[in-house]
Length: 129
Image (cartoon, rainbow, N blue to C red; front, top):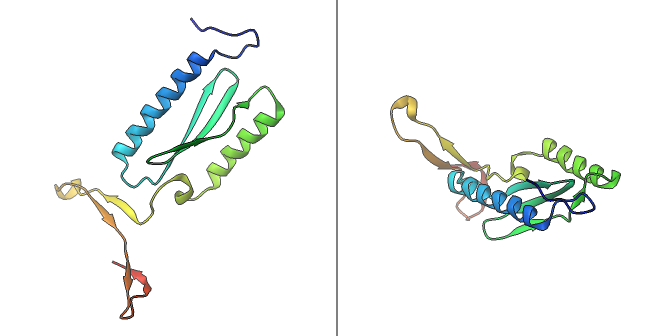
């Protein structure tokens, strides 16, 4: 049974449960995706939506976006569009780190890092190793 306040918005205890579920899921993402620099999250409880940016040691969030108002819907849709159009680095991936699946060769997979090579003077070149 869900408790609603007089305004129709779920009580803070249910919002806390939603935030707890999101934090547990983000921990699993970091545990299994080693090429994550940060992760995005969204919690929805009643008509309130909140967008999060989770780093390895911190979390940032927007204010509550009320989906009942045109302003809240506009902000949330704007965020969704930006996520769809963003490249991998804006979605939190470290592009120079990729998992190589070697199961076809009956070997364990491994992580491959692309590191810029240096010239004789110690300056980065356009090639990687």
